[in-house]
Length: 104
Image (tube, rainbow, N blue to C red):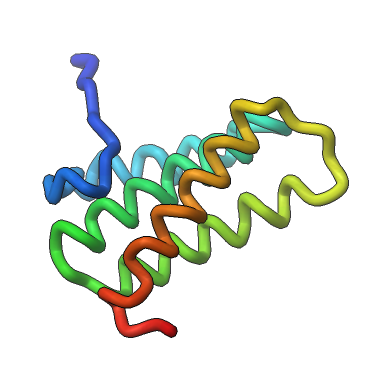
């Protein structure tokens, strides 16, 4: 399989192909511990990027769902600064776009 580089940057306005997202979600079941939390945050960011690109509130809500799952998975665990930063970055980006998607 050919390796593909995907830039995750919600502000870019560029969507990410749904096939890649489904692949990321399928790989979640193999992730353990801190890697699982990182992948949840990354998938949330991908959904947020597509929400912005397509102006789609359902995708925005899915991003929020992944944030919630990542925060829940972190509860009571000692995780690295990098993992905390990934989750906090997703949280911050979601806050940035909440008014765009009709949330107060």
